[in-house]
Image (cartoon, rainbow over all chains, first blue to last red; front, side):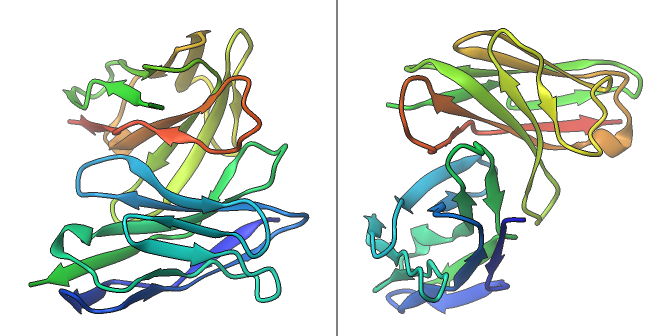
Length: 112
Length: 117
């Protein structure tokens, strides 16, 4: 079945540091890939998505590129802020299946 | 756009009582809504898929008689936790997929924290 493997956290960085959160997947066909962010005490918000190979999703300074050859969708940001502290979930959806398959989440803490 | 609300945001109840959680899509219509459960510091576990006008589809291991789901309209789905017990305490999150769009993006509600005493 489909699965998503995320880099284990927690991750602690200083403000303005470069961020990478690794995500790899196993899926049949051509899934869509997502990054969701969950701020403390809140539900999930869609951060970015990519629907086909070599697509780059981007939002709020975050980027992730759909790499079919390495089955990866790593999340990156060039300069993190304290407000980026949250839990980040990588997920995939195989079209027609409707269900989202989530990774375990990576807790990110940015210190001033 | 694409806002999903949940009510209540927090609920505390006594063991043995039933609790209803509402999930609404505020600015779009959703034929399909999903209910998830999230344990502390863990990922989301899909409980069931709710389709407007039909019975919900439950994931393996989820008791359908305990977690009653009703998708009464294109903007409202409800989850009722019947005869709640302390082990049902959790963060329940719903999501919705917009009708008529060929997108697999789900929009999530803010979650409901249930505490059963």
